[in-house]
Image (cartoon, rainbow over all chains, first blue to last red):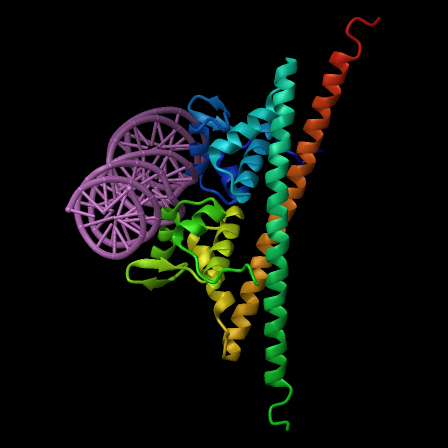
Length: 134
Length: 134
DNA sequence: ACCTTCATTGACCTAAACGTAAAGCCCATG
DNA sequence: CATGGGCTTTACGTTTAGGTCAATGAAGGT
């Protein structure tokens, strides 16, 4: 008995990922996702769900929807020609460079935050331990 | 002879960080930076320069200007009261959580990109090595 | 038959982050 | 002196990412 569903309503996904249905429809408008339909209603497959997950991860990384679209298109491409392949590889390398830059930014920021926080902690201790020590 | 300048024009900083003067003024409008003035002209100190650097790093990390403002304000706070300190620490922890999430997102994405790329490379080799082998 | 709930489309609205003129100040230089 | 370069403000335009109605439809309960 697999618990895994194979169809989701828009509300399902909205709940699961804490976004509004409006946002999900908006992504569809922008061509980022294309669920099946039952009449008017959207029906999302597990693949669609993964796509949405990718979209949201892209957003957390600060990509625009257009960029995310390009990335997803790349993923899906199944590139045929050699030129295509080479372009895809080049694109991968660019993405990696950007992500490495972000990694670096994050690391630096984390260190600074650690510094601030431990500084705070020390001050707090100094305030509390020796209330009237001299 | 220290090469380090201690005053910069808006164009200096714009060049150095590859942003437009307009953008820098916009950050000032939003209260993110407050250079000195010589008459009308803005004069940026090394501290201002660091601030701008922080702003741009924040942007690369996908923060909004408002969020960046809050973060910078925290950095600058020199918090006095114990309550302030505790709130700052709490804020640090939230930031760290968000950054860790981003770290994770980036790592996953990097792995996926690596997979795509090496897949591409393999296909390319298959295309080139055995042009008519049987 | 009626009501409620959920989903859909369409229209308009908003905030963020600038871009893009337009017009003026200040100063050096031919 | 007037011209050019760099900086300034003011103001309006643009793009992105949705929010917020409003009207409509289809499904299910009583």
